[in-house]
Image (cartoon, rainbow, N blue to C red):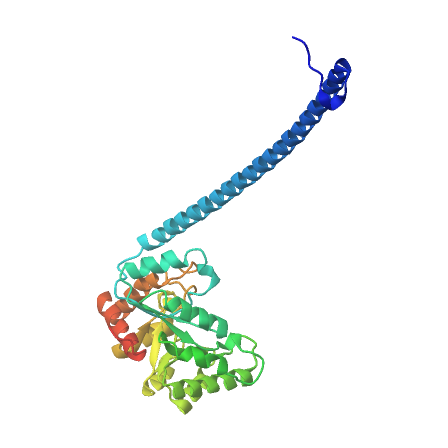
Length: 343
């Protein structure tokens, strides 16, 4: 076949064809170069996509590992709590009138423990604040469980170093789950300025009376001053973890106050507490833990929780010559009456 001259390249057909061939080669070269560029770009994009995919895979693996870790931690916590509950005698109906479930010692097991206690028949818990933050934490916890209630106040070991200022507690009193002002009082065991302690204790007694709420009183090696201020202001309330004499107990009872008894009564050296339990009118007894501290025997020195009150109740029943069921039932009724908790 004869080649036809290309009109674009001139009259010499041979030369024109040769020029066209060179141009075609150049165009093809450019085309392949462009194709190579596109291919390189595609490879780069593919590599970037692959890298992103790897990153996503690693993130998914990390997320899955974290989720697996959380699940394992949750399962371990549940198993730990179940072991704690399995060793208990019957704790149905118990009302723990004094606890601190915001304490960091309950971190990791708080939810399964409280769920296990309430599902097992625990009647109620008052968890106490020691300052503004812990009082807020007590209220937050109380809203998570039907049987949990809060007390708000400044503990003598947590006092701000200035004149009493209670305005920060005012909003907390309005909460429907707040049932008392506490934990408040005097602690002469620690080297804390006594005039400061008295000033705060007095201010909070007045505060509670105005709010028409009972007080939860801390009294450690300060029996005379505590009694004097309670006689002066005459609040409703309870002296928790009572450690005084029978004589002091009688004076407190004259004021209409309740006495809280915890794990200490099970200790071998608890002579005074045993004597008080022998004479204490049944309608003035409250059971408590002060958990996570003061676990009763045979768990002394270990983490305390509300279910262990079963051992405290058994010891008090032994001292008083009545059934454990009677101690649990009567003390729960007393707590609900003091804190005005409807059945």
